[in-house]
Amino acid sequence: MRGLQFRDNHLDSLFLYFFDLIFGDAAVEISGDVTIHGNVYGGGKAGSIEGTTNVDVKGNVNIFGEVYGAGQGLLSYKSKNYKEVATIIGDATVNLSENATIWQDMFGGGENAVVNGDTHFNMSGGHVAANVFGGGKGDIKKVSAADDAEYDRSSGALVITSADI
Image 1 (cartoon, rainbow, N blue to C red):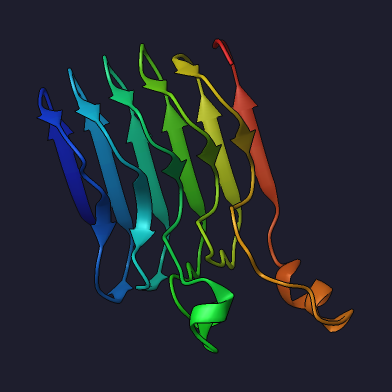
Image 2 (image 1 turned 90 degrees about the horizontal axis):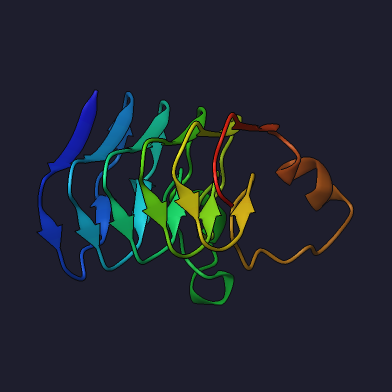
């Protein structure tokens, strides 16, 4: 498993990305006294993963950006192959616990990215100051009825045991 771990640090304007094609699982763990002024992605920036992604946010963490369980893809008008980048072939999971706070939106999926699996958001503590989405954020345009079948490949789960939302 490849992963990034940040503990007891103050991070300014940091975007956490995996940049290459990964065959296996990818994990990001953010814990301790950490502040991030930017987005957090469990997957790649236009890079794909054949495996699962897992983002764990716990402790006294403040994220002043958005949190995504998967990666960051491309806008449809910027590339004719936008559906093929930042794809997760597996599940994407975000876990939020303890006193961690996400100050913007939280997405189980990716940003302009495809998850060919399930998305999960598990919250056993912490705070989300904005919206929680089980899927991703994107600009993918529906062109025909066939597109429905192409993008209806996954299910999502939202589990909250106790939290302020």
